[in-house]
Length: 336
Ligand SMILES: NC(=O)c1ccc[n+]([C@@H]2O[C@H](COP(=O)([O-])OP(=O)(O)OC[C@H]3O[C@@H](n4cnc5c(N)ncnc54)[C@H](O)[C@@H]3O)[C@@H](O)[C@H]2O)c1
Image (cartoon, rainbow, N blue to C red; front, side, top):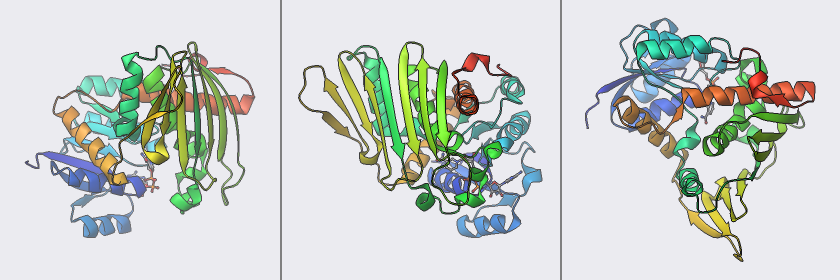
Protein backbone atom coordinates (compact mmCIF):
# COMPACT_ATOMS: atom_id res chain seq x y z
CA UNK A 1 0.00 0.00 0.00
CA UNK A 2 1.42 3.42 -0.87
CA UNK A 3 1.27 6.51 1.34
CA UNK A 4 -0.55 8.41 -1.34
CA UNK A 5 -2.79 10.80 0.62
CA UNK A 6 -1.51 13.91 2.38
CA UNK A 7 -3.68 14.56 5.44
CA UNK A 8 -3.67 17.58 7.73
CA UNK A 9 -5.06 17.15 11.26
CA UNK A 10 -6.19 20.54 12.63
CA UNK A 11 -6.38 20.42 16.44
CA UNK A 12 -4.23 17.78 18.14
CA UNK A 13 -6.04 17.67 21.48
CA UNK A 14 -7.90 14.65 22.78
CA UNK A 15 -9.66 13.46 19.62
CA UNK A 16 -7.19 15.02 17.16
CA UNK A 17 -4.35 12.93 18.56
CA UNK A 18 -6.48 9.81 18.11
CA UNK A 19 -7.31 10.74 14.50
CA UNK A 20 -3.64 11.43 13.81
CA UNK A 21 -2.59 8.04 15.18
CA UNK A 22 -5.42 6.21 13.41
CA UNK A 23 -4.89 7.85 10.01
CA UNK A 24 -1.21 6.89 10.36
CA UNK A 25 -2.25 3.31 11.17
CA UNK A 26 -4.18 3.01 7.89
CA UNK A 27 -0.79 2.97 6.15
CA UNK A 28 -2.38 4.97 3.34
CA UNK A 29 -1.35 8.54 4.13
CA UNK A 30 1.28 11.00 5.27
CA UNK A 31 -0.03 13.01 8.18
CA UNK A 32 0.81 16.58 9.20
CA UNK A 33 -0.25 17.97 12.57
CA UNK A 34 -1.60 21.48 13.13
CA UNK A 35 -2.37 23.05 16.49
CA UNK A 36 -2.31 26.63 17.69
CA UNK A 37 -0.60 25.44 20.90
CA UNK A 38 3.16 25.38 20.20
CA UNK A 39 4.00 23.03 23.10
CA UNK A 40 1.37 20.53 21.94
CA UNK A 41 2.68 20.76 18.35
CA UNK A 42 6.15 19.88 19.58
CA UNK A 43 4.88 17.00 21.73
CA UNK A 44 2.87 15.65 18.79
CA UNK A 45 5.88 15.87 16.47
CA UNK A 46 8.06 14.06 19.01
CA UNK A 47 5.49 11.32 19.73
CA UNK A 48 4.38 10.54 16.18
CA UNK A 49 7.35 11.71 14.11
CA UNK A 50 5.17 13.94 11.93
CA UNK A 51 5.73 17.38 10.41
CA UNK A 52 3.76 20.19 12.04
CA UNK A 53 2.35 23.54 11.08
CA UNK A 54 0.69 26.32 13.04
CA UNK A 55 -2.89 27.52 12.45
CA UNK A 56 -1.79 29.87 9.67
CA UNK A 57 -0.76 26.96 7.48
CA UNK A 58 -4.12 25.23 7.37
CA UNK A 59 -5.59 26.35 4.07
CA UNK A 60 -2.63 26.56 1.73
CA UNK A 61 -3.92 23.87 -0.60
CA UNK A 62 -1.09 21.38 -0.18
CA UNK A 63 -3.21 18.69 1.51
CA UNK A 64 -5.54 16.18 -0.13
CA UNK A 65 -7.73 16.21 2.95
CA UNK A 66 -8.10 18.07 6.23
CA UNK A 67 -9.46 16.53 9.45
CA UNK A 68 -10.97 19.22 11.69
CA UNK A 69 -10.63 18.39 15.40
CA UNK A 70 -10.98 21.81 17.00
CA UNK A 71 -13.92 22.91 19.19
CA UNK A 72 -17.30 23.22 17.41
CA UNK A 73 -17.35 27.01 16.74
CA UNK A 74 -14.26 26.61 14.52
CA UNK A 75 -15.57 23.69 12.43
CA UNK A 76 -17.52 25.62 9.79
CA UNK A 77 -14.99 28.40 9.08
CA UNK A 78 -12.08 25.92 9.02
CA UNK A 79 -14.00 23.56 6.72
CA UNK A 80 -14.81 26.41 4.32
CA UNK A 81 -11.12 27.43 4.31
CA UNK A 82 -10.02 23.87 3.55
CA UNK A 83 -12.60 23.42 0.77
CA UNK A 84 -11.66 26.75 -0.80
CA UNK A 85 -8.06 25.50 -0.83
CA UNK A 86 -9.19 22.36 -2.68
CA UNK A 87 -9.05 19.76 0.11
CA UNK A 88 -11.59 17.11 1.09
CA UNK A 89 -12.77 17.51 4.70
CA UNK A 90 -13.62 15.26 7.63
CA UNK A 91 -15.18 17.31 10.45
CA UNK A 92 -15.52 16.21 14.07
CA UNK A 93 -18.98 16.25 15.63
CA UNK A 94 -21.05 18.28 16.29
CA UNK A 95 -20.99 20.05 12.92
CA UNK A 96 -21.24 23.37 14.76
CA UNK A 97 -22.79 25.10 17.75
CA UNK A 98 -25.13 27.25 15.57
CA UNK A 99 -26.58 27.36 12.06
CA UNK A 100 -24.38 30.35 11.12
CA UNK A 101 -22.25 29.75 8.03
CA UNK A 102 -23.99 26.54 6.94
CA UNK A 103 -25.25 27.85 3.57
CA UNK A 104 -21.69 29.05 2.85
CA UNK A 105 -20.30 25.64 3.83
CA UNK A 106 -22.66 23.78 1.47
CA UNK A 107 -21.82 26.27 -1.29
CA UNK A 108 -18.06 25.85 -0.71
CA UNK A 109 -18.41 22.05 -0.90
CA UNK A 110 -20.41 22.19 -4.12
CA UNK A 111 -18.07 24.77 -5.69
CA UNK A 112 -14.96 22.79 -4.77
CA UNK A 113 -16.53 19.46 -5.75
CA UNK A 114 -14.80 17.84 -2.78
CA UNK A 115 -16.08 15.33 -0.22
CA UNK A 116 -17.23 16.41 3.23
CA UNK A 117 -17.99 13.82 5.93
CA UNK A 118 -18.70 14.30 9.62
CA UNK A 119 -17.00 12.02 12.14
CA UNK A 120 -20.04 10.63 13.94
CA UNK A 121 -18.04 7.48 14.58
CA UNK A 122 -21.06 5.25 15.35
CA UNK A 123 -21.44 4.92 11.56
CA UNK A 124 -18.54 2.41 11.60
CA UNK A 125 -19.48 0.43 14.75
CA UNK A 126 -20.01 -3.14 13.47
CA UNK A 127 -22.83 -4.06 15.89
CA UNK A 128 -24.72 -0.87 15.00
CA UNK A 129 -24.32 -1.45 11.28
CA UNK A 130 -25.53 -5.05 11.64
CA UNK A 131 -28.58 -3.95 13.68
CA UNK A 132 -29.35 -1.19 11.16
CA UNK A 133 -29.16 -3.63 8.26
CA UNK A 134 -31.53 -6.01 10.06
CA UNK A 135 -34.02 -3.17 10.66
CA UNK A 136 -33.75 -2.10 7.02
CA UNK A 137 -34.39 -5.68 5.85
CA UNK A 138 -38.01 -5.12 6.91
CA UNK A 139 -38.37 -8.50 8.65
CA UNK A 140 -40.00 -6.84 11.69
CA UNK A 141 -41.90 -4.23 9.65
CA UNK A 142 -41.81 -0.54 10.49
CA UNK A 143 -40.39 0.92 13.69
CA UNK A 144 -43.09 2.53 15.83
CA UNK A 145 -41.21 3.36 19.00
CA UNK A 146 -37.63 3.52 20.28
CA UNK A 147 -36.01 4.05 23.67
CA UNK A 148 -32.46 5.18 24.39
CA UNK A 149 -30.97 4.82 27.89
CA UNK A 150 -27.38 6.01 28.22
CA UNK A 151 -25.05 6.90 31.09
CA UNK A 152 -21.36 6.98 31.88
CA UNK A 153 -18.93 8.46 34.44
CA UNK A 154 -17.67 11.31 32.24
CA UNK A 155 -15.42 12.59 35.04
CA UNK A 156 -13.48 9.29 34.93
CA UNK A 157 -13.49 8.94 31.14
CA UNK A 158 -12.39 12.56 30.47
CA UNK A 159 -10.87 13.83 33.76
CA UNK A 160 -9.98 17.23 32.24
CA UNK A 161 -13.55 17.90 31.01
CA UNK A 162 -13.93 21.05 33.11
CA UNK A 163 -10.91 22.64 31.38
CA UNK A 164 -12.21 21.95 27.83
CA UNK A 165 -14.95 23.23 25.51
CA UNK A 166 -17.30 20.89 27.42
CA UNK A 167 -17.87 23.47 30.17
CA UNK A 168 -19.48 25.95 27.75
CA UNK A 169 -22.55 25.43 25.54
CA UNK A 170 -21.38 28.26 23.28
CA UNK A 171 -18.24 26.21 22.56
CA UNK A 172 -20.24 23.02 21.83
CA UNK A 173 -20.25 21.76 25.42
CA UNK A 174 -22.81 20.13 27.69
CA UNK A 175 -24.43 16.71 27.50
CA UNK A 176 -26.73 17.48 24.54
CA UNK A 177 -24.17 18.79 22.05
CA UNK A 178 -21.25 16.66 23.24
CA UNK A 179 -22.71 13.24 24.08
CA UNK A 180 -26.39 12.80 23.19
CA UNK A 181 -25.70 14.11 19.67
CA UNK A 182 -23.89 10.85 18.78
CA UNK A 183 -26.97 8.77 19.57
CA UNK A 184 -29.45 11.22 18.02
CA UNK A 185 -27.42 11.23 14.81
CA UNK A 186 -27.43 7.44 14.64
CA UNK A 187 -31.16 7.18 15.45
CA UNK A 188 -31.85 9.66 12.63
CA UNK A 189 -29.62 7.56 10.35
CA UNK A 190 -31.87 4.55 11.04
CA UNK A 191 -35.39 6.00 11.24
CA UNK A 192 -35.13 9.39 9.55
CA UNK A 193 -35.01 13.00 10.68
CA UNK A 194 -36.51 14.25 13.93
CA UNK A 195 -39.46 16.54 13.31
CA UNK A 196 -40.14 17.88 16.81
CA UNK A 197 -39.10 17.32 20.41
CA UNK A 198 -39.62 18.17 24.06
CA UNK A 199 -36.57 18.41 26.31
CA UNK A 200 -35.86 18.62 30.01
CA UNK A 201 -32.25 18.83 31.17
CA UNK A 202 -30.27 19.85 34.23
CA UNK A 203 -26.86 19.96 35.80
CA UNK A 204 -27.08 17.40 38.60
CA UNK A 205 -23.64 16.09 39.49
CA UNK A 206 -20.46 16.80 37.51
CA UNK A 207 -18.17 19.04 39.60
CA UNK A 208 -16.75 22.36 38.36
CA UNK A 209 -19.22 22.87 35.46
CA UNK A 210 -22.75 24.22 35.16
CA UNK A 211 -23.79 22.76 31.79
CA UNK A 212 -26.40 19.98 31.65
CA UNK A 213 -25.13 16.52 32.56
CA UNK A 214 -28.60 14.91 32.52
CA UNK A 215 -31.06 15.01 29.62
CA UNK A 216 -34.56 13.70 28.87
CA UNK A 217 -35.90 14.11 25.32
CA UNK A 218 -39.21 12.99 23.85
CA UNK A 219 -38.95 13.17 20.05
CA UNK A 220 -41.15 12.51 17.04
CA UNK A 221 -39.77 11.31 13.72
CA UNK A 222 -42.91 11.39 11.61
CA UNK A 223 -45.12 8.77 13.26
CA UNK A 224 -42.25 7.22 15.25
CA UNK A 225 -41.88 8.18 18.92
CA UNK A 226 -38.40 8.15 20.49
CA UNK A 227 -37.50 8.61 24.14
CA UNK A 228 -33.91 9.51 25.11
CA UNK A 229 -32.43 9.57 28.61
CA UNK A 230 -28.78 10.37 29.27
CA UNK A 231 -26.71 11.13 32.33
CA UNK A 232 -22.96 11.69 32.50
CA UNK A 233 -22.25 10.68 36.08
CA UNK A 234 -23.57 7.15 36.71
CA UNK A 235 -20.78 4.62 37.22
CA UNK A 236 -21.83 1.86 34.86
CA UNK A 237 -20.87 2.99 31.36
CA UNK A 238 -23.91 1.61 29.60
CA UNK A 239 -25.98 2.54 26.57
CA UNK A 240 -29.02 0.59 25.41
CA UNK A 241 -31.20 1.35 22.40
CA UNK A 242 -34.41 -0.58 21.76
CA UNK A 243 -36.57 -0.36 18.64
CA UNK A 244 -40.12 -1.71 18.90
CA UNK A 245 -42.47 -2.84 16.13
CA UNK A 246 -45.67 -4.88 16.22
CA UNK A 247 -43.68 -7.88 14.95
CA UNK A 248 -40.75 -7.72 17.33
CA UNK A 249 -38.06 -5.66 19.02
CA UNK A 250 -34.40 -4.99 18.30
CA UNK A 251 -32.13 -4.19 21.24
CA UNK A 252 -28.57 -2.84 21.08
CA UNK A 253 -26.23 -2.94 24.09
CA UNK A 254 -23.12 -0.86 23.51
CA UNK A 255 -21.54 -2.11 26.74
CA UNK A 256 -21.66 -5.70 25.45
CA UNK A 257 -21.03 -4.72 21.80
CA UNK A 258 -24.04 -6.81 20.84
CA UNK A 259 -27.46 -6.52 19.30
CA UNK A 260 -30.43 -8.83 19.60
CA UNK A 261 -33.87 -9.57 18.25
CA UNK A 262 -37.04 -10.63 20.04
CA UNK A 263 -39.64 -11.73 17.48
CA UNK A 264 -43.35 -11.66 18.31
CA UNK A 265 -44.05 -14.90 20.18
CA UNK A 266 -40.40 -15.55 21.15
CA UNK A 267 -39.48 -16.38 24.75
CA UNK A 268 -36.03 -14.78 24.84
CA UNK A 269 -33.62 -12.53 22.97
CA UNK A 270 -31.43 -13.88 20.17
CA UNK A 271 -28.08 -12.11 20.46
CA UNK A 272 -25.37 -11.28 17.91
CA UNK A 273 -21.97 -10.18 19.21
CA UNK A 274 -19.39 -8.27 17.17
CA UNK A 275 -16.61 -7.35 19.62
CA UNK A 276 -14.00 -4.78 18.67
CA UNK A 277 -10.61 -5.11 20.32
CA UNK A 278 -10.02 -1.47 21.26
CA UNK A 279 -11.39 2.01 20.67
CA UNK A 280 -8.73 2.93 18.08
CA UNK A 281 -10.09 0.16 15.82
CA UNK A 282 -13.27 2.19 15.20
CA UNK A 283 -11.22 5.27 14.36
CA UNK A 284 -8.93 3.33 12.00
CA UNK A 285 -12.06 1.98 10.29
CA UNK A 286 -13.46 5.51 10.11
CA UNK A 287 -10.19 6.82 8.61
CA UNK A 288 -10.19 4.02 6.03
CA UNK A 289 -13.83 4.76 5.13
CA UNK A 290 -13.00 8.42 4.62
CA UNK A 291 -9.97 7.57 2.45
CA UNK A 292 -12.16 5.14 0.46
CA UNK A 293 -14.69 7.93 -0.05
CA UNK A 294 -12.16 10.46 -1.34
CA UNK A 295 -10.86 7.75 -3.69
CA UNK A 296 -14.36 7.64 -5.20
CA UNK A 297 -15.87 4.67 -3.37
CA UNK A 298 -19.38 4.78 -1.82
CA UNK A 299 -19.68 6.90 1.33
CA UNK A 300 -20.20 5.04 4.64
CA UNK A 301 -19.77 8.01 6.97
CA UNK A 302 -22.21 10.67 8.11
CA UNK A 303 -22.93 13.15 5.31
CA UNK A 304 -22.87 16.93 5.66
CA UNK A 305 -26.66 16.95 5.15
CA UNK A 306 -27.23 14.42 7.97
CA UNK A 307 -24.88 16.26 10.33
CA UNK A 308 -26.69 19.55 9.61
CA UNK A 309 -29.96 17.80 10.51
CA UNK A 310 -28.47 16.55 13.80
CA UNK A 311 -27.17 20.05 14.49
CA UNK A 312 -30.81 21.20 14.26
CA UNK A 313 -31.70 18.40 16.71
CA UNK A 314 -29.09 19.72 19.17
CA UNK A 315 -30.31 23.32 18.83
CA UNK A 316 -33.96 22.27 19.09
CA UNK A 317 -33.20 20.35 22.29
CA UNK A 318 -31.48 23.39 23.83
CA UNK A 319 -34.36 25.66 22.73
CA UNK A 320 -37.00 23.23 24.05
CA UNK A 321 -35.25 22.99 27.41
CA UNK A 322 -35.09 26.77 27.57
CA UNK A 323 -38.75 27.35 26.65
CA UNK A 324 -40.30 24.29 28.28
CA UNK A 325 -42.36 23.61 25.15
CA UNK A 326 -42.26 21.43 22.01
CA UNK A 327 -39.91 22.70 19.31
CA UNK A 328 -40.43 21.84 15.64
CA UNK A 329 -37.05 21.63 13.90
CA UNK A 330 -38.50 23.27 10.77
CA UNK A 331 -39.22 26.40 12.80
CA UNK A 332 -35.67 26.96 14.08
CA UNK A 333 -34.41 30.41 13.13
CA UNK A 334 -31.87 30.32 10.30
CA UNK A 335 -33.37 27.15 8.84
CA UNK A 336 -31.63 26.15 5.59
N1 LIG B 1 -15.90 11.48 18.11
C1 LIG B 1 -15.59 11.46 19.39
O1 LIG B 1 -15.66 10.43 20.05
C2 LIG B 1 -15.12 12.74 20.04
C3 LIG B 1 -14.48 12.69 21.27
C4 LIG B 1 -14.01 13.89 21.83
C5 LIG B 1 -14.22 15.09 21.16
N2 LIG B 1 -14.87 15.11 19.98
C6 LIG B 1 -15.11 16.39 19.26
O2 LIG B 1 -13.86 16.82 18.71
C7 LIG B 1 -13.72 18.25 18.82
C8 LIG B 1 -12.45 18.55 19.64
O3 LIG B 1 -12.58 17.95 20.91
P1 LIG B 1 -11.31 17.60 21.84
O4 LIG B 1 -11.88 16.87 22.98
O5 LIG B 1 -10.23 16.99 21.04
O6 LIG B 1 -10.90 19.08 22.28
P2 LIG B 1 -9.49 19.53 22.89
O7 LIG B 1 -9.75 20.81 23.60
O8 LIG B 1 -8.84 18.39 23.62
O9 LIG B 1 -8.59 19.82 21.58
C9 LIG B 1 -8.85 20.87 20.69
C10 LIG B 1 -7.50 21.33 20.12
O10 LIG B 1 -7.74 22.32 19.12
C11 LIG B 1 -6.67 23.26 19.20
N3 LIG B 1 -7.06 24.51 18.53
C12 LIG B 1 -7.95 25.43 18.97
N4 LIG B 1 -8.06 26.42 18.06
C13 LIG B 1 -7.25 26.11 17.03
C14 LIG B 1 -6.94 26.72 15.79
N5 LIG B 1 -7.52 27.89 15.42
N6 LIG B 1 -6.05 26.13 14.97
C15 LIG B 1 -5.46 24.96 15.33
N7 LIG B 1 -5.71 24.33 16.50
C16 LIG B 1 -6.59 24.89 17.33
C17 LIG B 1 -6.43 23.41 20.69
O11 LIG B 1 -5.15 23.94 20.98
C18 LIG B 1 -6.59 21.96 21.17
O12 LIG B 1 -5.34 21.28 21.19
C19 LIG B 1 -15.01 18.75 19.47
O13 LIG B 1 -15.90 19.14 18.45
C20 LIG B 1 -15.56 17.51 20.18
O14 LIG B 1 -16.97 17.52 20.29
C21 LIG B 1 -15.30 13.97 19.39
